[in-house]
Structures are given as C-alpha cells and as structure tokens.
Image 1 (tube, rainbow, N blue to C red):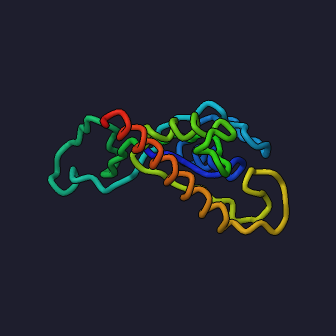
Image 2 (image 1 turned 90 degrees about the vertical axis):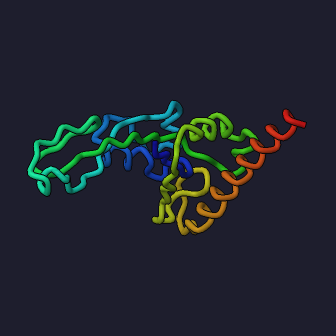
Image 3 (image 1 turned 90 degrees about the horizontal axis):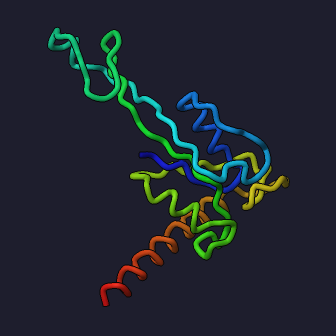
Length: 153
C-alpha cells in the first residue's frame, strides 16, 4: 500500500482521485479528509504473454493487449501539521493511519499559497513543508520505538 502524506490542503485527495478515478471529496478547506480515503490504482507494465505467445491470466489485476495492469492500493490520510507527533490536529490518529502503508509519497503544494496548516497565504516557502513533515515522521517513528523498548525492558 502507498500512503499519501502532506500538510492539509496540499493536493493529496486530488492526487488520489487522478491516480485511481475514485470519487473522493475535494475542497480548498483544510481537513476535508478526516477518515482515510483508500482506492486502487494500476501500474501498467509490458506483459510477458507477448514474448511467450501465451494467453495471460494474472492472479491480481488484468492483462489487455499485451499490457499487464497491476493493482496498487493507495491510502490518502488527513493532512499533518507541525507537532502532529504530539497529537496536534489529531496527528497521532493520522500518523497511525499511515502505519498501514509500505511506502509514502509526500505531496507538496509548491504554489506557496498555503501555510504549514493548509490555510491561504502568499509567498510561503514549500521547503518548510518538506522539513517539518520529515521531522514529524522521524519523531513519530522514534516514539513508537521508544514505547516498544519500554515494553521489553
């Protein structure tokens, strides 16, 4: 599963909708997404059926005209704000929703028109979003590991 992560109002749900054609609520209002949106997208690959001249019957996805369509589950979680690892903005719940993902895609609003909380502004440096989100994920992982060590020791 791929997790879409970023601040509120950064385009995560728009990306999910574009990648999967799922019907999800999209709004320029921070925290439009509270409950995660989950949908299936497909990765298109050349199928070996043409090479081996056989009829393809994949266990997952489908094959059409020599193209294999491999299903990929994508989860769009609510936006994270600075100090999410401390529970700010329901951050712990949203971070826990991400726990299901095997990989994360950070969706960044490079327009500079929303601040770190997804509120309208002008001239915001999107580099701040990259730094704060990486820090939040690191601090969240650290807290999970520390809790685990306390249980053992």
